[in-house]
Image 1 (cartoon, rainbow, N blue to C red):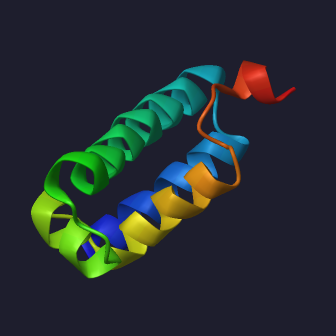
Image 2: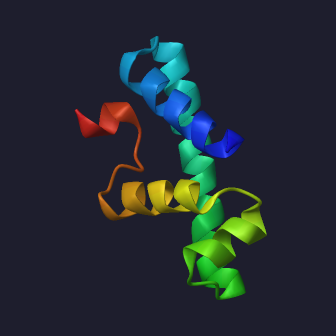
Length: 81
């Protein structure tokens, strides 16, 4: 449950927080996206539950990160404006 709360709080900070908070969220999300991709490429994991177990995060967090990756939201905020 704590991971889902972190994602929700982090997303809120990203949307409404200071530029510093937004940068922290973007940095965290980019690092986690890379970890998810590494699980797929290096470990051959394909199910969100497998990736979540390997990274010790929730399946909801994995789905959130996969959604960001598929929507192309993995660049910095400056890249998206």
